[in-house]
Length: 303
View 1: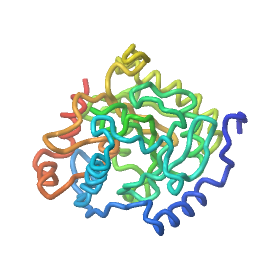
View 2: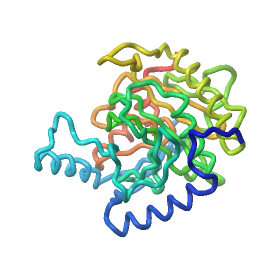
View 3: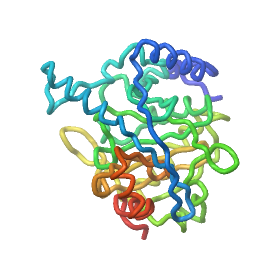
View 4: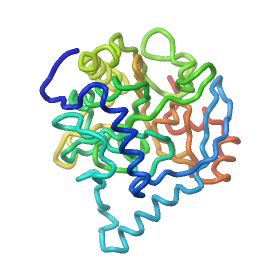
């Protein structure tokens, strides 16, 4: 494994630390899981997992609580500066921490958070990829990034996210993965706008070498989408919103033209084949439209 003094996470410690932190945070009430019912909707050769999150309003209640105690609703409190001690799993590097998602739908939902404030619309850096891939080396998982509010980001403080793989035919994986193939940077059976690439080095083999390769591939995929760095609010930020999905051997980038299909918000996990709705009405919206049409609407049609 490539060595750098910037990384402080010891190999083999993240998953035990994640389990221990989860247990104690559940016991103290610091971690508040959101219960869901799960539906499967087949469309375009993909078995989409749609979770009906009837208690998603808990997040909204917390925002109202913050406003009621005098916090500015226009500039809400930053939950990552600093993160709750009870939710902090590990120090990853000099630049990043691993933190549990307080209101989580998926178990073992880990946030890779910058220690100092960086805006969610600034482009990802090599340090971001190093922190992420060191974590991905620890256990099989899917990583994702919501680049800006139109891409489903709910917090402006830069954070990548890591979730367990999903149940698919024959084991665990990613529902959309059956369509992630083809020559070049496009997958012929994905109907929404995207760019795609494969990694030759797995994080499990050499996370820091994989991070360097992944960072280069990320910049290439954004370039193909026409997304670059632009000056905004006194700093360099992305020129357009996008989602990013990363597994141990592939990366998918999706441009975004809007956050919602009607009232249904879509983040990066939608392009993995996993959608979340607040109630039965939104579930019916997805059934009628079809998940692939929903994704085509929020990302634009593939050219």
